[in-house]
Image (cartoon, rainbow, N blue to C red):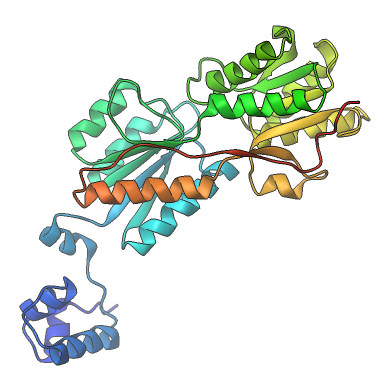
Length: 335
């Protein structure tokens, strides 16, 4: 298969290879007429400048790496949509790596991204362990954290205030008259979304004079199946409750399935609020009341910050993005 080269373009446009290179890199030193001739030759020949060859000139590959613990989740795909939108607008390609639940592939993928010579990395939803930080430091490229933060290292991040959002979700159920409120939480050893959301739930109960009961809490891994299992265990073993806060929409939807299987109705017999506002939460029946995280906006912001760092901006700060409650049909007032 014939692949045109920069020499072919130069020949077709009747200019030097250096002139073609200058046009490709938006450098000066040629007339508008010459530029049009070169662009026309590029189009007619179907010439695609090699990213690595371009990188030899600007020391960049115009690619960024993104690390997700679960690429297939609705949460990840909505963030990725935002990341890709901004990256594409600014002329960057995106390499997505699925690091798996316990981060067992994180080091492997950091090595892959190093070999690919990416210009920067978006690191999402995982604790930034010392070994990861060391690997990133050795790569000497910018990093932006998403849905996580490092208290040890000064790395810009984009996330919501998980503790505050969980507090607000629980307080909303209390305002609707509920006092027996259960929770499906992430694991407490997870300092990113597990512990802070549990703290928010617990604090809201305490601030409203409601006793926190460990027996009303079950744990999951933020995915659908774990929410279903957690709900089955709460219905079988927990003291009775009239409302539930699930720390992710997927767990809330899994919980709804377990409730329906018991012949109970939502919200008549049990009110449920989720967390994330995934597209899926509008599609279930009844539609899920939830905490809205602007996931695509988080992705856009992260991409923006990373590309600014790649392009030598020194003034990139962290962002706590705002959340709010989206009222649908899974919570009723208890009167």
